[in-house]
Length: 127
Image (cartoon, rainbow, N blue to C red; front, side, top):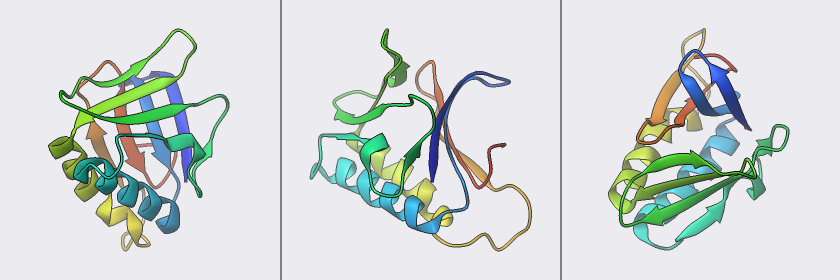
């Protein structure tokens, strides 16, 4: 699954996970579940097996006491912070992407819109 930061999309800044890749989606789902349960407190998503960062996209997912969402820093890395309950919700939203799409066309889901950068998963580079 590709991981890409789109600075100037129609929705404003977007962190996009894209591609029809059930294995990559499953890796993300398990990672989000681990953040929700507290087994992980921080993880570099761009370093996960099956996740291909496009360009210099670097994303750290953090389990925090608040949910400020995804923020880009001066070095253009992204810190995506959500509280445990929100990570659980994000994991549930990833579930449909862990299997091949049953319908033709683009399938997508907004995962997080708490911060200035919206996070979306899609079967293609559009949504």
